[in-house]
Length: 323
Image: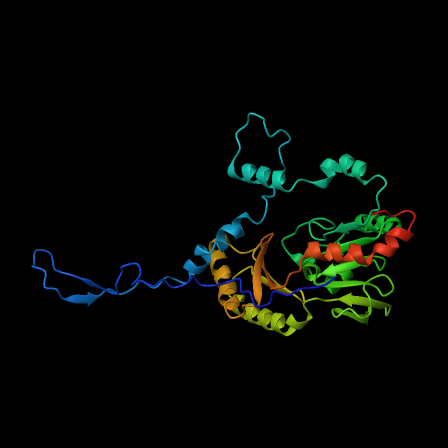
């Protein structure tokens, strides 16, 4: 699979300055005192310098932060029910309509899967573990681990997460799975089942048990930059109560789930000010988290496509698993 990098495209840019002479606006305007005759003299009118927080408001960051997560409420069963809905109910219903649960359509999915080969891809947070206030406490239950282990006996199974690959590997603890961390920018799989040895972004390595594995890392060159941004954000957000910054190897997460909403503009501005100096990095929004990633044409969806291509031989040679 050929990878193309769009490294020169900055995400955060300031609006282009306008040529005021073309608009007929000049930097000096005639001014006269009330009741006095016009003297023809001009005085300079100082331009208002926008406040720093205008940056994050004008570029939509705050709106995105508020809308990036569904309210933690149960969805009402009947959308047409004649009941009064508060703002949280409406927001939650809208979210679920846009992102429906696969379990609701399980029978249809199974019907479509007949006579096709199957591979299983799952996120971690909110899927294999609950969404919690402290990301370090998102622990996978023993029952869930057993269920995933049983699924992996029959179908190639991978976890695609925004967390670092090493972290999610430690949390799950199943060696028979494929792992893609950092939003798919760090993929680990068995040497004889994944990409070819001559792929430019593939390297041989060993896992925690000393077993040889293949690593696919399309954003490897960004490691020093990501580490530098991580250290800067830790320092710049340390005075914001509840803020938590995590280094996920190929991306940095700034959590604001435990930050008072009145301080959201402050934490957004901290991230904005740091990113202005890194045009090869971009910002994305997650559930109560701001995520800094490299500007490359790669994401979880690309990771799924890559793994499907890499798993081709397994899928076609395994009598149980079908794609």
